[in-house]
Amino acid sequence: MKDIFSYNADINKNAYMNWRTNRFDHIHNMHVIAEGFMNSAITLAETCLKDNHDKKADMLIFPILFNLNHGIEVYLKSMSWNLNQLLNRTDSFESSHNLKSLLENTKKLTAEFDNRTEALQWSIQLVKYIDELYTKIETVRDNGKKVYDITFARYSLTRDLEPQFYITEFNNVVIDLENFVQFFNDVYKDLDNMSSYLLDILEQRNELKAEMESEYHSNS
Image (cartoon, rainbow, N blue to C red; front, side):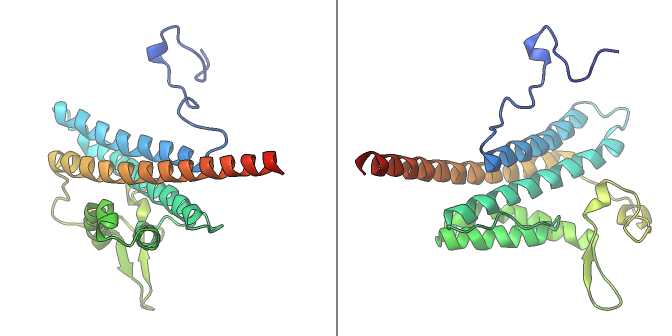
């Protein structure tokens, strides 16, 4: 068998894992990963819309939702890390898979960096989705503690080895793929634009800092 990690003679039939990444720019690399996961979720949903005569959407919806949520998670983490650097902090990002918490933290950092109302425009649609999602995956334990299970798209069982919400529901649990593609194209655009904007600001600041340091050393 030919190695999976190998070249094809046709350059358009290769996937270059390090073409878009940068060895020294970790935040940029997270942006690349986030972009890939969100793009793949939407692309896969579009594939199902083009031809679903075999009902493949009923099984592909799980990797679609996993890729979507992971893309959102990595976007929020990369933006948080970027904002922390712009705010001259040493923190990176919250080590959690809790999308609601990650979103609130990123919004808070955004407001600290730019207190204009429009600075949070990127989060409006995303808030709607995460609020809806958590009505499905968040439960309250007997002790009153809220717990969430973001692994719903990866495993058919919860952490307590109970069936996920879509299995125990009597009525069909359905996702309108046309609405999904339309809605998340907007979310994707909002996240990608904001993340790219922050990356540009950080890059410009770092370049200016490097120029000033170089000038200082040349004059000393």
